[in-house]
Structures are given as C-alpha cells and as structure tokens.
Length: 126
Image 1: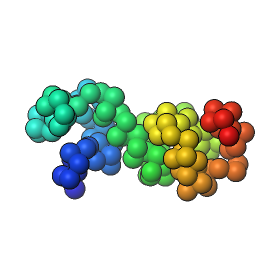
Image 2: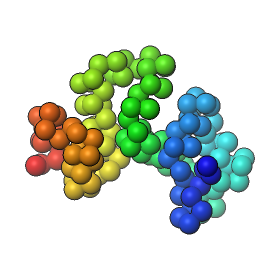
Image 3: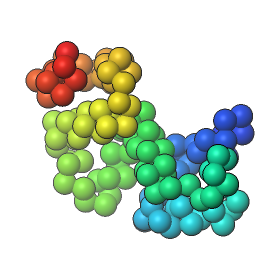
C-alpha cells in the first residue's frame, strides 16, 4: 500500500497511523515522508504536523478496534475502559470531521449514536 493516494495526492490514513506507531512522533513521521519525497502537493513542502495527525486520526476513527489495541500497548489510560474510549473517539470525530452531518453518520455507523447521545448532543447542537 502506498503512503500517498495517487489520484488525490493525499496521505493514506492507515499508512500514516502505522508510521506514527513505528516512529513514535509526528515529527519523525513528517521527516520520514519528506525523505521519501512525499510533499504537500500545493506547497511542495513537507506535510505539516497537523496534516500528519489528522490523517492518523482518520484511521483511528475508521478502525477504532485495531487502533485501540495499539493504544493499549502504549498504556493510554483512555483505551482500557469502553466508555472512556468511546467518548474519546467522539471528541476526536467532532474535532476531525467538523461537519455535523458527517459526525452523526459516523456515530450511527460506529453504533455510538444512542448510547452516547448525552455526550455529543450539546456539542453538536442536535
């Protein structure tokens, strides 16, 4: 699998997440991508740390069960309790996706829409 999607020149979230796990810091991932010649297509400069983070988090949001195992390996407190983990995911989804419709669709797809309504209703103004 390639790190950059050829048609869109966007980073591939799964590969960026795996690099983050392997290299341990966003700065190292950013440097690794630049060394391999993967640059922001608009600026022709290395991807920003935030671009790397957003891509890694997109993978976490789309594959939470797989990502959770990595978080547990690194002793992230929020990964060990289901409710805390799901609330953490919802916070990240709100921050990463921004669009209310997209967030609500994600919540429904992940099966979090009913049980965690108390957690997101005020934040989304639903």
